[in-house]
Length: 206
Image 1 (tube, rainbow, N blue to C red):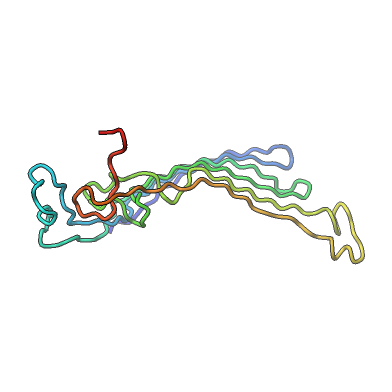
Image 2: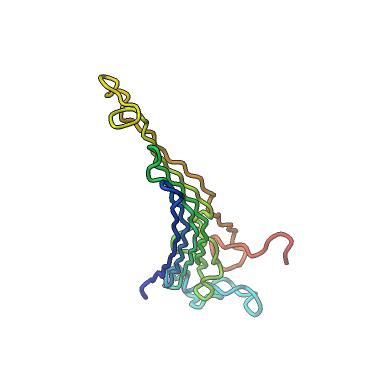
């Protein structure tokens, strides 16, 4: 098999906001080629034209065989994202970071099953579309606040209070994300024996 290859590029701009805050905007893109994709090397032709009256097996390249399952390095994927972030490494005892990412991930394996897209190697990328593993919008926030009680902090404590109430911190993470895309599949309306083909008609269209 040819070796799968990933091309990746990125750029970012960072700016200080006063003494304690930093803002950043970054871009990341990638292009993957020669991904392994599951195919049927003996997939039947569509029952149309001169083939309309033939059975499924008669429309296969090798009529004596059923599906010939294999993998070919024909898949591809394209990813792009823009991330904005703001950070406070240490502001009055608070460490805070927040990221917001918009991304778009397109792939030939759009059914949701690893390495599977359109099983016909002649039209392998006809199902190319949004990846089912990547949400378009995502926001992550994390923080750590050192309470101002204890040795070396704003309110010094002594005796038992130093051990009970001193040195504490409050931290947490909050994440918000869109759901990933979902594939829509149907029964074998194409007459090619595929278990979960993709529909090619929507309401109101010919």
